[in-house]
Structure formats: C-alpha cells, structure tokens
Length: 383
Ligand code: NAD
Ligand code: MG
Image 1 (spheres, rainbow, N blue to C red):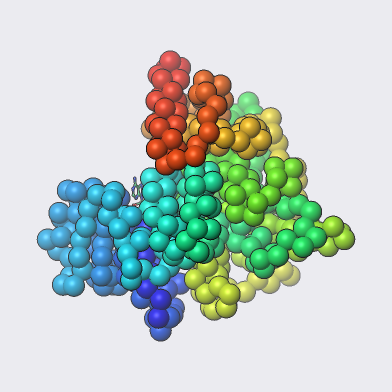
Image 2 (cartoon, rainbow, N blue to C red):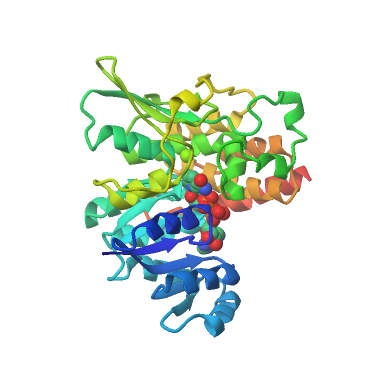
C-alpha cells in the first residue's frame, strides 16, 4: 500500500488521479490532499477519501473546512503546509499537480525528501530545473513525468538513451489551429479554453491555444531527459493519438499511442515499472479519423519560438519566460489584454530582465518576482 499526497487535488489532474486511485484501493491510500481556496470541493473529497491531511492554502477557506471536515482529517493552511505534506515521512508518492509557479516549492520539498514525484506541474521544471534535478539526484527521489508527451517518451526510452538521436513532441495545435492570424487578435478567453481534445484547467488551456504549452514542454523535456534544444522537435498532430516520438540513429522511431485521456499517464506514474488498469478505453485505430502531422506555424504562434530561444539562452531565461507567461495569461483571462498580446508581453519581459544565473532558491524566487513586476508594468503600459 503506497501513501499518496495529491497537490492540486481539486484540479483536472488531481481529480483524474483520484479516479485512477479509486480503481486500486488495495494499492494506494490517499494520505494528503491540497487545494488553493476551494473548500466545498475539498470537503467532498475529504468525505470520499478520508485523507490524514487536507491542506487549503487560503486560511479562511481552511477555517470553513476545519469546521465541517470528517473526523480523522487534519486541516492545515498556508503555503508551508504544502511542503510539509509533500515531505511528510509517511508520504511515499507525490502528485505535483498545482498549476504554475505556485507548485515549485512543494515539488522541491518532495525532491529533497526523496519521494516519487509524479510531475504534472511542468512550470516547476521550467522555473527551477537545475535546482530540482540536483535535489533529486542528491536525495535519490524518482521523477516520473505525467505530462502525456513526456510520459510517452519516458515509456519509449525505459531509462536508456542508447542510440537516441532526437525526440518529437506532438502538439494538438489547440483550438486555433486553423484560425487565420488576422482573427487571432479578437479571440476570447472562453474560445481559448475550449480545447478540441482535452479538458484541462484554464491556464494550461490558454497555453495550449498559444502553443506556449508546447514551448514549456520543450524546456521540460530538456530537463527531464537531458537533451539539447536541437534534439527536441515539435510536430502538430491534431488527433492527439500519438503522444510523442523518439528517433534513434538507425532510423527506428518508437512512439506511445492511446486515446487522449490523462489517466493513462497518471496510472503509469503510479504503477511504474508495472502497469495497471487506468479506466481508459483501448484504442481502436480502425475507428479513428486519419492521423495528420504538420509543422507548427511559428508566425501565428510565436510563443513556441520564444520558448526555444529562452532554452538556448539558458540561465534565467526559461524562468523569466514562465513568469511573464503566467502574468500575461492571467491578464488575458481577465480580459485586460488580447490573445496576441500574450506573446508580445513575454517578448518585452525577456528583453527587459537582465540575464542571471539561478543557482539558489533565493535567486529563483527573486527572478520570478522581478519578471512578474516587469510583466505587470508592460501590460499596464499597453492598456
Ligand atoms: P487546474 O487549474 O484544473 O487545477 C489546479 C490545482 O492547483 C487546483 O487544485 C487548485 O486548487 C490548485 N492551485 C491553484 N493555484 C494554487 C496556489 N496558488 N497554491 C496552491 N494550489 C493552487 O489545473 P490542471 O489542468 O489540473 O493542471 C495542473 C498542472 O498540470 C499544470 O501545471 C498543468 O500544466 C499540468 N498538466 C495538466 C494537464 C491536464 O490535462 N489538465 C496535462 C498535462 C499537464
Ligand atoms: Mg502535455
């Protein structure tokens, strides 16, 4: 029986994780659950799963939950509580499924404490990739990707890079794959969040629409698999059936296929190196529409190019890109800026924030705060 801590339990990945866990009550015990503010949703989860700990970052929300939580559930609040449950001696596996940089310190805590980290929160790696990877090496923690493309590559590589020449991350192309550039300026947040293949949180949905999600995934792949930028390519595949490809020197290409359902990757992160049922139906290619592959349109979706550039520059550039993107996406969702202003904002922030090394947690936090401030002033100056 493995004790599981789910950070971001009320979100899309968190709930899918609970779905998979519910299929295997003999293997997994829900030890801790966390969310930001949603106490009603958390109360329902506490009633169903009876975790030992329930964390709500917001103290008022935690107070509400505390009054109503079932007996035996200890309610904690504050950001430090996330790291506390992630690193708790009884926690064995941590699902890192908080959205954005808010997930970084708890992921780092799990890394330092030597846990199995099932990583959905790609922003942690983009923000503090070197720190996280070195903490994992030092503690002997396991890092298992949950992002579907990276899970696919992880499954194909099985720990070995022998003969590996490059990888190709597949991208659905998002809801605006066929929208003319001239119309992109006027698309709305609800159109951007209406993804054709996946149901996800709003931030990653907008990232998928701008292709920044793929850009963050390129950087994520660099840290997860120790690949150079020119070994990581992106190919648009609107059906999301092939979840990524690994190319070898002899011309072989390995890939993992499956229906677009995150429970496959979540289940594999839980059961690795074994496999188990995930609740996902089996793929019948005879019933699928034709599989299509296209190069990405870098003119309409310049965020992807910005992410590649940031990765090539290295140092703080990926972290600056991530902070600027988080601020710009929030401003787009709040209707303060248009869709095409997202990439323009990020570009301005990357130009304005000086290059620096990020060797310590303090430098990561400082760079994140500075980049956010710059992004906010860029947005204000555009308004
Ligand atoms: P979501 O918005 O549905 O859920 C986010 C969760 O994080 C919620 O439980 C929320 O309470 C919590 N949270 C939000 N802000 C927080 C804060 N400041 N402090 C603590 N907790 C906070 O998001 P999601 O779609 O589940 O995505 C989660 C992560 O997984 C993201 O990093 C995303 O890029 C990644 N991911 C998601 C999918 C997907 O299919 N949804 C696929 C691949 C990767
Ligand atoms: Mg992905």
